[in-house]
Amino acid sequence: MKVLVPVKRVIDYNVKARVKPDQTGVDLANVKMSMNPFCEIAVEEAVRLKEKGVATEVVAVSIGPQQASETLRTALAMGADRAILVQTTEDLEPLAVAKVLAAVVGKESPDLVIMGKQAIDGDNNATGQMLATLLDWPQATFASAVEVSGKKAKVTREVDGGLQTLEIDLPGIITADLRLNEPRYASLPNIMKAKKKELAVEELASLGVDTKPRLKVVKVTEPPKRAGGIKVETAADLVSKLKTEAGVI
Amino acid sequence: MAVLVIADHDNATLKDNTEKTVTAALKLSSDVDVLVAGQSSGNGGAKAVADAAAKITGVRKVLLAESAELGEGLAESMEALVVPLMANYDAVLTPATSQGKNFSPRIAAKLDVAQISEIVDVVDASTFVRPIYAGNALETVTSSDAKKVITVRPTVFKAAADGGSAKVETIPAPAKPAKTHFVDQKLVKSARPELSGAKIVVSGGRAMGSADEFHKVIEPLADKLGAAVGASRAAVDAGYAPNDYQVGQTGKVVAPELYIAIGISGAIQHLAGMKDSKVIVAINKDADAPIFQVADYGLVADYKTAVPELMSALTAAGK
Image (tube, rainbow over all chains, first blue to last red; front, side, top):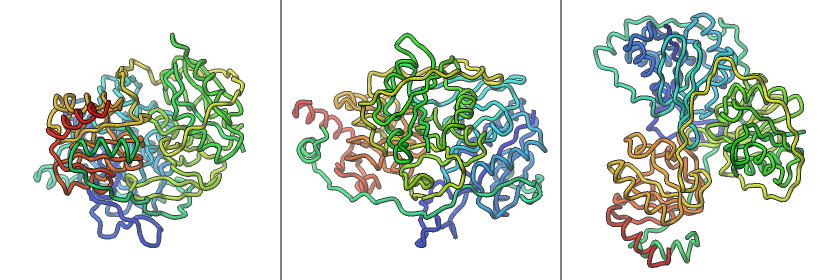
């Protein structure tokens, strides 16, 4: 069974995004970039499927600038077998990403696509669902447990107020939620090995996909700041302030 | 233009995310219909939900579709139901719950339009404001698509009041999806209010140190205040609290009247999930914890002593 794992290069999880003074976007110059944390979870899950003997090949794919190959090397160091970079300097919207991924799926014919539920830059939480729709494949989003047997995957999903379990026929799309697993750190020998693994580069234009943006960014601004409050000395003070000053209890 | 709002409910009661999304929809157009997709159940079912939706002021008409798969919220069924309806609408607005986030992008993909995710403001019928980078930036976007597919962050909109009397029209449900099969659903039964709509939220962080301690410290305080229980991502990752307690950009976004953060340092991603609360209280022994920068009232103290003191002070104050 072949598993395709799309990964995205984004601002590092621990770095605070800063809005550019000209309000055209977020300043990413000289900012640490890493693999989107939800994508890491997806890679980990795919690699575990391989280690369990369920998957035979794990292919990582990223759409982005040349530097996204570093993100793909991380996926390879975690255990992916080979990687594909669809190279572009354009910033693609989820619909366009889904269309590009659909084209990659067309070429690679995976049995399963595992991807993060959302990227922490655009926070759209849309690409996996859109890809499933474009391919007419079943989807199981926000997965916290995945069990593959034969041509089916049983997926436990995080839903409002609890968990839902679905069974999907493969090929299908699974999007990873936080609790699915804890991604491994790549070991030094595996990082070295990853340098020798295949990383194919394809130009976005060669796929012939319509990636025209549908949204125009008018401006990007800082959210309004909360004014700092006061410190209270005791719990009793706190209760009296909440009662008389704030009126919330 | 006409706008369709997809109701949030549990096959028994209408959730106020719906009324809040109607408020956002009314900023786009005065022609707002509500779609209730669900199934009948022992306690009223989708029909009762539709009757409740018909009472929302400003709603023109309620559409009701019933099937087991719609009740289970299968994304494929929701898409198959909504896409043909979009011939009559210029925009569809869905509350950005885990359910809404699951199916809404499918509608967008099928219509070949962008989804505008988790809007927090409507500038005009094509221009919207939405948070990006875990709420560290707000993006204003204009959509050039003929039809708008939008998810709405309900906490920032006021719920539309009751007072309407729209008619309920039953429409056929789509066929069962062929490749997705519902197995089961385990919802946590709780006497506490639901996190996303609660007036008071008490949240615990990694400082709790264990799931036991989390239950012992956070839950009695929450119950005393009639509050919902929340947790930071760190506490969830450490296994102290279930994932559906998680407040933050990767969990639930809440905006209660009162948010009490206990032993939570205030990571960016947590702040993104609660900074719109009316009053924020932080209890943390680290005076430099970032949570104090957003807190209206900060108490620098170990929760181990502060929470019992807070419990007694609340009792003394008649709580």
